[in-house]
Amino acid sequence: GLGTVLYEPWAVDPNDMDVDTIPDAWELSYFSDLAIINDTTDYDGDGLPDIDEYTHGTDPLQSDSDGDGMPEGWEVDNGLDPLTDDAVEDADTDGYSNLREYLALTDPSDDQDQPLAWGDIDRDLDVDGSDLATLSTEMGRTDCSAATPCACDLDQDGDVDNFDLLFFSEDFGKIIP
Image 1 (tube, rainbow, N blue to C red):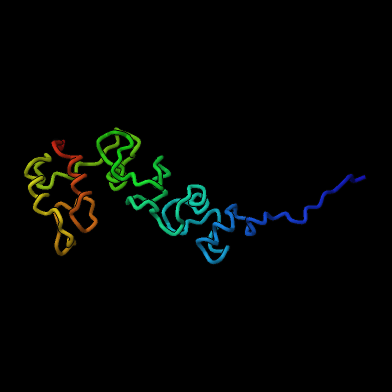
Image 2: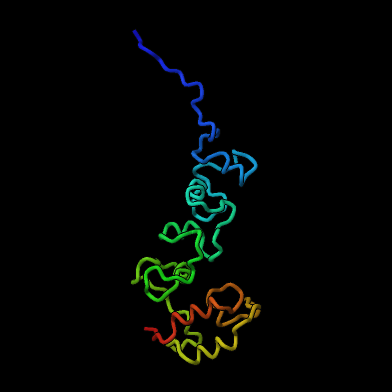
C-alpha cells in the first residue's frame, strides 16, 4: 500500500511562529509585534536587512549601531565591522580613513579608488600652510550652515571639528592635478 505516513503536528518552529527565519524572542526584544519585520525588511533603512541585523548582532532600530558615522549596510558590504568604531581606520592603506571613503563614495578596500582632495580650501590646487591657517581659524565652529558657511567643514556636518582635521591631514601636501 501506501506505507507509513508521518504526521508532524508542529510544522512551525515554536521559536519562529511567524516563519521569517528571525527568532521571535529577538524580534520581540526590539518590536512589540512579530508582524513589524521579516527576513526582507530593513526597518532602520541602513541597507542591512533585518535578518542580517540579527545575524550580525546590530540594532535594527539604529542605522549606525557603533556610532562611527557609517551605516551598517555600507560597513558590511565593504567588509568592515558594524559593531566597531572603525571610522578613522584605513582598510586599504591608501591614506584615507574609512569614513572619508564612505562620504566620498569611494571603495575602502581599493587603494586606487581615492577621494578627491577636500583640503584645498583656498582652491590654489595644493593643500598647504595657507589652507591649514584657515582651518586653524575655523576650528571649533559649530554654526556652519548655508547662512553662515564654513570653508573648513569638510564633512558637511555643520561644524569644524576633529574629523575635518583628519580629512585635511589626509590631503596635506597634495598637489591637485
